[in-house]
Image (cartoon, rainbow, N blue to C red):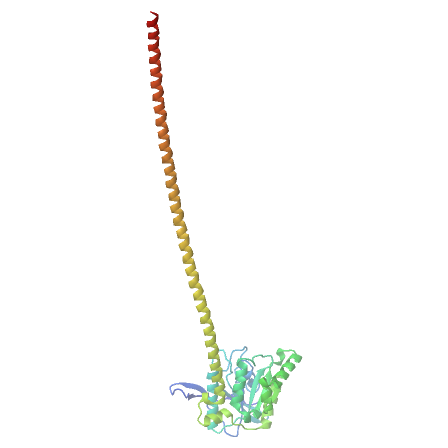
Length: 350
Protein backbone atom coordinates (compact mmCIF):
# COMPACT_ATOMS: atom_id res chain seq x y z
CA UNK A 1 0.00 0.00 0.00
CA UNK A 2 2.96 2.33 -0.10
CA UNK A 3 6.34 3.10 1.37
CA UNK A 4 7.43 0.62 4.04
CA UNK A 5 10.16 0.77 6.66
CA UNK A 6 10.60 0.02 10.33
CA UNK A 7 11.68 2.60 12.93
CA UNK A 8 14.92 1.68 14.79
CA UNK A 9 14.70 0.08 18.24
CA UNK A 10 16.54 1.59 21.20
CA UNK A 11 17.07 0.65 24.84
CA UNK A 12 15.50 2.45 27.79
CA UNK A 13 16.38 1.69 31.46
CA UNK A 14 13.62 0.16 33.58
CA UNK A 15 12.36 1.73 36.80
CA UNK A 16 13.85 -1.14 38.83
CA UNK A 17 17.51 -0.88 37.95
CA UNK A 18 19.74 1.25 35.81
CA UNK A 19 21.71 -1.88 35.01
CA UNK A 20 18.69 -3.51 33.44
CA UNK A 21 17.07 -2.40 30.23
CA UNK A 22 13.97 -3.05 28.13
CA UNK A 23 14.23 -3.05 24.37
CA UNK A 24 11.97 -0.05 23.65
CA UNK A 25 11.35 1.76 20.36
CA UNK A 26 12.64 5.29 20.15
CA UNK A 27 9.89 7.09 18.20
CA UNK A 28 11.13 9.00 15.19
CA UNK A 29 7.78 10.72 14.83
CA UNK A 30 6.25 14.02 15.81
CA UNK A 31 3.15 15.20 17.71
CA UNK A 32 1.14 15.71 14.50
CA UNK A 33 1.78 12.24 13.06
CA UNK A 34 -0.90 9.52 12.96
CA UNK A 35 0.10 6.78 15.40
CA UNK A 36 -2.08 3.69 15.85
CA UNK A 37 -1.33 0.98 18.40
CA UNK A 38 -2.33 -2.60 17.63
CA UNK A 39 -3.03 -4.65 20.77
CA UNK A 40 -4.60 -7.92 21.88
CA UNK A 41 -3.83 -11.35 23.27
CA UNK A 42 -1.07 -13.49 21.80
CA UNK A 43 -2.04 -15.17 18.53
CA UNK A 44 -4.95 -12.91 17.53
CA UNK A 45 -3.23 -11.66 14.37
CA UNK A 46 -1.64 -8.31 15.30
CA UNK A 47 1.43 -8.78 13.13
CA UNK A 48 -0.71 -10.18 10.34
CA UNK A 49 -2.91 -7.07 10.49
CA UNK A 50 0.14 -4.81 10.19
CA UNK A 51 1.60 -6.92 7.38
CA UNK A 52 -1.29 -5.83 5.15
CA UNK A 53 0.28 -2.36 5.13
CA UNK A 54 4.02 -3.06 5.34
CA UNK A 55 6.24 -6.08 4.93
CA UNK A 56 8.36 -5.35 8.01
CA UNK A 57 5.97 -7.12 10.39
CA UNK A 58 7.03 -10.64 11.38
CA UNK A 59 4.04 -12.95 11.06
CA UNK A 60 3.79 -16.19 13.03
CA UNK A 61 1.72 -19.25 12.17
CA UNK A 62 0.60 -20.47 15.59
CA UNK A 63 -0.56 -19.19 18.98
CA UNK A 64 2.95 -18.47 20.23
CA UNK A 65 4.00 -14.85 20.13
CA UNK A 66 6.16 -13.75 17.24
CA UNK A 67 6.32 -10.17 18.57
CA UNK A 68 8.69 -10.06 21.51
CA UNK A 69 9.07 -6.28 21.80
CA UNK A 70 7.35 -3.16 20.62
CA UNK A 71 8.14 -2.16 17.05
CA UNK A 72 6.97 0.73 14.87
CA UNK A 73 6.04 0.09 11.24
CA UNK A 74 5.50 2.92 8.76
CA UNK A 75 2.94 2.71 5.97
CA UNK A 76 1.28 5.10 3.57
CA UNK A 77 -2.51 4.80 3.48
CA UNK A 78 -4.49 7.04 1.14
CA UNK A 79 -1.40 9.24 0.71
CA UNK A 80 -1.12 9.64 4.50
CA UNK A 81 1.79 8.39 6.56
CA UNK A 82 0.64 6.16 9.40
CA UNK A 83 2.78 4.64 12.16
CA UNK A 84 1.49 1.25 13.28
CA UNK A 85 2.72 0.10 16.70
CA UNK A 86 3.03 -3.67 17.01
CA UNK A 87 2.86 -4.65 20.69
CA UNK A 88 3.64 -7.96 22.42
CA UNK A 89 0.50 -9.96 23.12
CA UNK A 90 -0.84 -10.53 26.59
CA UNK A 91 -1.42 -14.06 27.87
CA UNK A 92 1.91 -15.03 26.30
CA UNK A 93 3.43 -18.49 26.71
CA UNK A 94 6.92 -17.23 27.63
CA UNK A 95 6.41 -13.85 29.33
CA UNK A 96 4.21 -12.66 32.16
CA UNK A 97 1.50 -10.07 31.60
CA UNK A 98 3.33 -7.86 34.10
CA UNK A 99 6.47 -7.85 31.94
CA UNK A 100 4.46 -7.05 28.83
CA UNK A 101 2.48 -4.27 30.53
CA UNK A 102 5.73 -2.82 31.84
CA UNK A 103 7.19 -2.70 28.31
CA UNK A 104 4.07 -1.06 26.89
CA UNK A 105 3.95 1.39 29.79
CA UNK A 106 7.58 2.43 29.24
CA UNK A 107 6.88 3.09 25.56
CA UNK A 108 3.69 5.04 26.33
CA UNK A 109 5.50 7.11 28.95
CA UNK A 110 8.28 7.89 26.49
CA UNK A 111 5.71 8.87 23.86
CA UNK A 112 3.86 11.07 26.36
CA UNK A 113 7.10 12.86 27.23
CA UNK A 114 7.61 13.48 23.50
CA UNK A 115 4.06 14.89 23.23
CA UNK A 116 3.08 12.09 20.87
CA UNK A 117 -0.55 11.06 21.15
CA UNK A 118 -2.19 7.99 19.70
CA UNK A 119 -4.73 8.53 16.95
CA UNK A 120 -6.36 5.33 18.11
CA UNK A 121 -5.97 1.72 19.17
CA UNK A 122 -6.94 -1.41 17.28
CA UNK A 123 -7.74 -4.19 19.80
CA UNK A 124 -7.88 -7.51 17.97
CA UNK A 125 -9.75 -10.60 19.13
CA UNK A 126 -10.26 -13.96 17.43
CA UNK A 127 -13.97 -14.45 16.75
CA UNK A 128 -13.79 -18.11 17.74
CA UNK A 129 -11.74 -17.48 20.86
CA UNK A 130 -13.35 -18.31 24.18
CA UNK A 131 -10.46 -16.81 26.12
CA UNK A 132 -12.61 -13.85 27.20
CA UNK A 133 -12.90 -15.83 30.39
CA UNK A 134 -10.28 -16.30 33.07
CA UNK A 135 -7.08 -14.59 31.90
CA UNK A 136 -8.91 -13.06 28.91
CA UNK A 137 -11.34 -11.24 31.21
CA UNK A 138 -8.47 -9.95 33.32
CA UNK A 139 -6.63 -8.64 30.27
CA UNK A 140 -9.78 -7.00 28.92
CA UNK A 141 -10.29 -5.26 32.27
CA UNK A 142 -6.65 -4.21 32.28
CA UNK A 143 -6.98 -2.83 28.73
CA UNK A 144 -10.03 -0.81 29.79
CA UNK A 145 -8.11 0.69 32.72
CA UNK A 146 -5.10 1.34 30.48
CA UNK A 147 -7.25 3.42 28.14
CA UNK A 148 -9.53 5.07 30.67
CA UNK A 149 -13.14 6.06 30.00
CA UNK A 150 -12.15 9.05 27.83
CA UNK A 151 -9.75 6.98 25.72
CA UNK A 152 -12.19 4.22 24.75
CA UNK A 153 -13.83 6.32 22.04
CA UNK A 154 -10.56 6.05 20.08
CA UNK A 155 -10.56 2.24 20.24
CA UNK A 156 -11.69 -0.15 17.51
CA UNK A 157 -12.55 -3.66 18.71
CA UNK A 158 -11.84 -5.81 15.68
CA UNK A 159 -12.61 -9.51 15.38
CA UNK A 160 -10.28 -11.69 13.32
CA UNK A 161 -10.25 -15.16 11.74
CA UNK A 162 -13.84 -15.19 10.56
CA UNK A 163 -13.05 -18.10 8.27
CA UNK A 164 -12.54 -20.35 11.31
CA UNK A 165 -16.30 -20.53 12.06
CA UNK A 166 -19.51 -20.86 10.06
CA UNK A 167 -20.93 -17.38 9.45
CA UNK A 168 -24.02 -17.86 11.63
CA UNK A 169 -21.92 -19.00 14.59
CA UNK A 170 -19.43 -16.18 14.08
CA UNK A 171 -22.23 -13.60 13.99
CA UNK A 172 -23.79 -15.09 17.14
CA UNK A 173 -20.40 -14.88 18.84
CA UNK A 174 -20.06 -11.25 17.71
CA UNK A 175 -23.47 -10.39 19.22
CA UNK A 176 -22.43 -12.05 22.46
CA UNK A 177 -19.19 -10.09 22.58
CA UNK A 178 -20.78 -6.72 21.86
CA UNK A 179 -23.79 -7.03 24.18
CA UNK A 180 -22.52 -8.85 27.27
CA UNK A 181 -21.47 -6.26 29.89
CA UNK A 182 -18.68 -8.49 31.16
CA UNK A 183 -17.27 -8.76 27.63
CA UNK A 184 -17.38 -5.80 25.21
CA UNK A 185 -20.75 -4.37 26.19
CA UNK A 186 -19.32 -1.84 28.61
CA UNK A 187 -16.58 -0.84 26.18
CA UNK A 188 -19.10 -0.25 23.39
CA UNK A 189 -21.18 1.92 25.73
CA UNK A 190 -18.10 4.11 26.25
CA UNK A 191 -17.63 4.67 22.52
CA UNK A 192 -15.58 1.74 21.24
CA UNK A 193 -16.33 0.87 17.61
CA UNK A 194 -16.74 -2.78 16.60
CA UNK A 195 -15.49 -3.78 13.15
CA UNK A 196 -14.62 -7.04 11.42
CA UNK A 197 -11.16 -7.92 10.21
CA UNK A 198 -12.59 -10.50 7.85
CA UNK A 199 -11.34 -9.43 4.42
CA UNK A 200 -7.57 -9.27 4.57
CA UNK A 201 -6.02 -5.99 3.42
CA UNK A 202 -9.38 -4.48 2.47
CA UNK A 203 -10.98 -4.82 5.91
CA UNK A 204 -7.70 -3.83 7.60
CA UNK A 205 -7.65 -0.62 5.58
CA UNK A 206 -11.27 0.01 6.52
CA UNK A 207 -10.38 -0.22 10.21
CA UNK A 208 -7.44 2.16 9.88
CA UNK A 209 -9.50 4.62 7.83
CA UNK A 210 -12.17 4.61 10.54
CA UNK A 211 -9.58 5.74 13.08
CA UNK A 212 -8.07 8.34 10.76
CA UNK A 213 -11.51 9.77 9.96
CA UNK A 214 -12.33 10.09 13.66
CA UNK A 215 -8.81 11.41 14.40
CA UNK A 216 -9.31 11.97 18.10
CA UNK A 217 -5.76 12.07 19.48
CA UNK A 218 -5.94 10.53 22.91
CA UNK A 219 -3.89 10.56 26.07
CA UNK A 220 -4.45 7.24 27.78
CA UNK A 221 -5.26 6.98 31.46
CA UNK A 222 -2.06 5.01 32.06
CA UNK A 223 0.00 7.84 30.55
CA UNK A 224 -1.68 10.44 32.78
CA UNK A 225 -1.23 8.30 35.90
CA UNK A 226 2.47 7.75 35.25
CA UNK A 227 2.92 11.45 34.40
CA UNK A 228 1.48 12.14 37.86
CA UNK A 229 4.30 10.11 39.36
CA UNK A 230 2.52 6.83 39.99
CA UNK A 231 4.52 3.62 39.76
CA UNK A 232 3.14 1.06 37.34
CA UNK A 233 1.68 -1.13 40.09
CA UNK A 234 -0.11 1.94 41.48
CA UNK A 235 -1.92 2.67 38.22
CA UNK A 236 -5.41 1.34 37.51
CA UNK A 237 -4.12 -1.06 34.83
CA UNK A 238 -1.27 -2.23 37.05
CA UNK A 239 -3.75 -2.62 39.90
CA UNK A 240 -5.81 -5.04 37.82
CA UNK A 241 -2.79 -7.26 37.28
CA UNK A 242 -1.74 -6.87 40.92
CA UNK A 243 -5.21 -7.91 42.09
CA UNK A 244 -5.20 -10.85 39.70
CA UNK A 245 -1.77 -11.98 40.90
CA UNK A 246 -2.90 -11.67 44.51
CA UNK A 247 -6.04 -13.67 43.71
CA UNK A 248 -3.90 -16.32 42.02
CA UNK A 249 -1.60 -16.34 45.03
CA UNK A 250 -4.56 -16.84 47.37
CA UNK A 251 -5.90 -19.59 45.12
CA UNK A 252 -2.48 -21.28 45.10
CA UNK A 253 -2.23 -20.98 48.88
CA UNK A 254 -5.73 -22.39 49.32
CA UNK A 255 -4.91 -25.23 46.96
CA UNK A 256 -1.64 -25.78 48.81
CA UNK A 257 -3.52 -25.88 52.12
CA UNK A 258 -5.94 -28.44 50.67
CA UNK A 259 -3.05 -30.51 49.33
CA UNK A 260 -1.21 -30.26 52.65
CA UNK A 261 -4.39 -31.36 54.43
CA UNK A 262 -4.74 -34.29 52.07
CA UNK A 263 -1.07 -35.10 52.57
CA UNK A 264 -1.53 -34.94 56.35
CA UNK A 265 -4.51 -37.28 56.18
CA UNK A 266 -2.61 -39.65 53.92
CA UNK A 267 0.35 -39.56 56.31
CA UNK A 268 -1.97 -40.30 59.26
CA UNK A 269 -3.61 -43.13 57.33
CA UNK A 270 -0.19 -44.50 56.41
CA UNK A 271 0.95 -44.32 60.04
CA UNK A 272 -2.24 -46.10 61.14
CA UNK A 273 -1.68 -48.75 58.49
CA UNK A 274 1.91 -49.18 59.65
CA UNK A 275 0.76 -49.56 63.27
CA UNK A 276 -1.91 -52.04 62.22
CA UNK A 277 0.66 -53.91 60.11
CA UNK A 278 3.08 -54.03 63.04
CA UNK A 279 0.31 -55.26 65.37
CA UNK A 280 -0.71 -57.91 62.83
CA UNK A 281 2.90 -59.03 62.46
CA UNK A 282 3.21 -59.19 66.27
CA UNK A 283 0.07 -61.33 66.49
CA UNK A 284 1.30 -63.58 63.70
CA UNK A 285 4.68 -63.92 65.42
CA UNK A 286 2.99 -64.73 68.74
CA UNK A 287 0.74 -67.24 66.98
CA UNK A 288 3.76 -68.88 65.39
CA UNK A 289 5.60 -68.98 68.71
CA UNK A 290 2.52 -70.42 70.44
CA UNK A 291 2.21 -73.04 67.73
CA UNK A 292 5.86 -73.94 68.24
CA UNK A 293 5.33 -74.20 72.00
CA UNK A 294 2.18 -76.23 71.52
CA UNK A 295 3.99 -78.47 69.07
CA UNK A 296 6.84 -78.90 71.53
CA UNK A 297 4.34 -79.68 74.26
CA UNK A 298 2.59 -82.16 72.04
CA UNK A 299 5.95 -83.75 71.25
CA UNK A 300 6.81 -83.95 74.96
CA UNK A 301 3.39 -85.39 75.75
CA UNK A 302 3.82 -88.06 73.09
CA UNK A 303 7.23 -88.98 74.45
CA UNK A 304 5.83 -89.12 77.98
CA UNK A 305 3.03 -91.43 76.82
CA UNK A 306 5.51 -93.63 75.01
CA UNK A 307 7.69 -93.65 78.11
CA UNK A 308 4.75 -94.63 80.33
CA UNK A 309 3.71 -97.34 77.88
CA UNK A 310 7.25 -98.64 77.82
CA UNK A 311 7.31 -98.71 81.60
CA UNK A 312 3.98 -100.51 81.69
CA UNK A 313 5.20 -102.92 79.05
CA UNK A 314 8.35 -103.56 81.00
CA UNK A 315 6.19 -104.08 84.10
CA UNK A 316 3.98 -106.51 82.27
CA UNK A 317 7.01 -108.32 80.97
CA UNK A 318 8.32 -108.55 84.52
CA UNK A 319 5.00 -109.87 85.77
CA UNK A 320 4.87 -112.38 82.93
CA UNK A 321 8.40 -113.52 83.74
CA UNK A 322 7.57 -113.71 87.43
CA UNK A 323 4.42 -115.68 86.67
CA UNK A 324 6.39 -117.99 84.40
CA UNK A 325 8.98 -118.60 87.10
CA UNK A 326 6.24 -119.19 89.65
CA UNK A 327 4.60 -121.62 87.25
CA UNK A 328 7.90 -123.42 86.72
CA UNK A 329 8.42 -123.66 90.49
CA UNK A 330 4.89 -124.89 90.94
CA UNK A 331 5.38 -127.45 88.20
CA UNK A 332 8.64 -128.58 89.79
CA UNK A 333 7.06 -128.80 93.23
CA UNK A 334 4.15 -130.77 91.74
CA UNK A 335 6.48 -133.17 90.03
CA UNK A 336 8.49 -133.53 93.20
CA UNK A 337 5.33 -134.13 95.18
CA UNK A 338 4.10 -136.69 92.72
CA UNK A 339 7.40 -138.55 92.89
CA UNK A 340 7.37 -138.57 96.63
CA UNK A 341 3.79 -139.72 96.73
CA UNK A 342 4.62 -142.67 94.53
CA UNK A 343 7.36 -143.66 96.88
CA UNK A 344 4.99 -143.33 99.77
CA UNK A 345 2.46 -145.53 98.12
CA UNK A 346 5.08 -148.22 97.34
CA UNK A 347 6.30 -148.28 100.90
CA UNK A 348 2.78 -148.76 102.11
CA UNK A 349 2.23 -151.81 99.88
CA UNK A 350 5.35 -153.36 101.08
